[in-house]
Length: 312
Image (cartoon, rainbow, N blue to C red; front, side, top):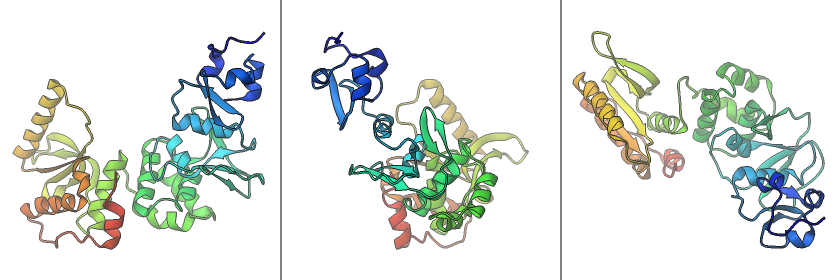
C-alpha cells in the first residue's frame, strides 16, 4: 500500500536513503518527486526538512560508493571533530577501481588494505593514517594543529603517531615527519596551537602549553594557555562567543587580578584580533620586552604571512 506523499517514514526521516530503500518503505517515485523529499544525488534522497550537514552529505555519498569505501584525508579529520583545510571536496578512499564523477568528491584509489573503523556510525580511516593523508592538503601549521588535536582528543598518542610515521611509506609521510618535531604535549585546542606557532615562527621565545602558574611562595595562581614563565608573560586565546554570566565575569576578573598582583602580564587574543595577526605577535613582543626580553622584534617573512594572515 502506497504511503501518503506528505508522510516521511520515521526510519528514513533523519538520514539519506536510496530509491530502493524508499520503495521498500512504501514511498514511490512520484512521491519522491513531491515537496516532502529532496534529491541529493542521483538515486539518493532525504526528507525536505532535513538539515544538510557534513555528516548528511558523507552518508549520502557512501550510499553510492563501493562497499569498502571509507572517509579519508581532511574529511576524516572533520569526522574526528577537527575542522581544518577546505571543507569541499569530500575525500573518500577505496581499494576498488571505481571513480567518482561528482565534482564535489575525490575518491582515492589505494593499494593495500584499508584499516577503517566506525566513528559515530561513519566508516573512517584511522587517525594516524589520516594525518599522513592530510599532509598533502594542509600547510605545516594546520598539520601540527591536526596532530595535536587528535592527540588531545585521545584518538592517538604522541608515541603511537611517532611510531606510525617512522614505519609507513605513504605519500605525505615525509612532510608529516618534518612537522612532527613541532608537536607539543599539553595543547588543548587548535587555536592554542595556532597562537603558539604564530609566536614560534615569528622567532619569539616558545611558550609552554597549559601549565600551572604559581607565585614566588609556590601557591597556585592559575592554569595558563601559553606560558612564558621566564618573563612572566601569559598569552591566552579567548574563544567566548557570547557574554559571560556574572559569576564567570567575576571569576575571570579575580583570576586576572591574582596574576597581575604576582607580576604577570596577560596578552588576551580574541577571534577579532586574528584579523591582524602581525599585531598579535607585536603585542606578545611588547609584553616580553616590558618584562626584560632583549631579543629582536617579530620576524614575519613571506612564509609566515602566507600561513597566518587569514587563519580563521
